[in-house]
Amino acid sequence: MPLREGGLNSRVVYIDGGNTFDPYVVSAIAQEYGLEPRSVLKRIVVSRAFTVYQLTALVFERLEETLKRYRSKLVVISDICGLFLDRDVPKIEGRNLFLKITRYLLEVASRRQAIVVASYFPRLHPRSHFLEAVLFGRTGIVISFKECAGGLKFVLEDHPSIKPFTIDLPSNPGTMDMFIEA
Image (cartoon, rainbow, N blue to C red; front, side):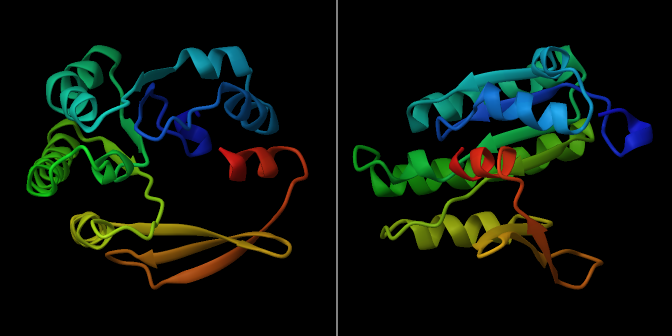
């Protein structure tokens, strides 16, 4: 979105670690904000990772170059922990890679003056606790969305200067359902 409307007036780099990017959802949301869906989609650079090693390569070898090339101010990494839970990834190797990636993302955000948004989906898995602790320990702001009877609850859980709060978001029958599924 344009700066005057609260946006970053920037392309978005979307690293899809959870196979969650859905152009139909993006188009529907763009329409709700009065934006032309095709132009919004053209401003999103999507890369999919199917293994922790592909995710690592995208972050370390391509992210900063891509941010510079497209003058991006926003990076979205979907399901940042999911690929690290793969049983084919040795536990210690996965932990070390996750520590390196999260540290590197902080450095890139600072160096490029960019916002990094990483989605995390809680799971019952032995490695989840470690990954969650590292992720939340290195995060400046923690936001969650919780399903409730009337739609969603937006919860600001942690912020360096704002007290935690909750806002009920009413469900829009079309877009909100698609958003929850994505």
